[in-house]
Length: 267
Image (tube, rainbow, N blue to C red):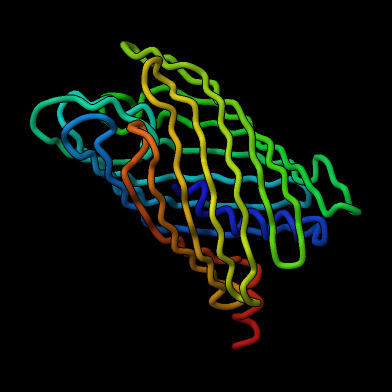
């Protein structure tokens, strides 16, 4: 998933924010493809294209993501979360495309800091706005409110991360969605001055009683192309019927402040 793939950017941001009290603004986009049967007999396919604006103001970070989705599912499939969980339907395959749920996130960096242990805890609150509505088949049609704590332990080239959170679910008509626990653990390794690789295990409690919890393993490689540009590749596989069978994607991001510096130097 995208949230795991951008962990490399989150880790580097957590390390640097305490050192730089200026405003950093970045833009990113990419594409993700995933496929799975989710306990049914027919494949459910999704193409996810996120557009993300991220701004860091000292210890506060703001992130807004607006995705474009294309989802192919059997008729009457219920998508509780694009790329996360689906209740398969039956019948002919139908394809829907459009704007997905917009996500706004606010992060407080350095909620707790131990300089001696190189240990940091950040706190993040999000709102997932139900932009397309349930009639488009691109989401449940109700807002969600995730809350999350992220703990980082920094070594020389290795960074470890553990996250825990809780997601307050909306109640769309005809679907009983439960509030759920969220957790992940993993790490990244700086293989060179320009390359980061890492792996994560993600767990999300099922929002529908009786279905498997979501469990995924992902791996990524992030490459700094220049001072202003970074590219990431990632892949993931699901471990339960409620998870995608497999998927992958790429992200391209640019730091606007560094981009302006590069343009001045080129000029």
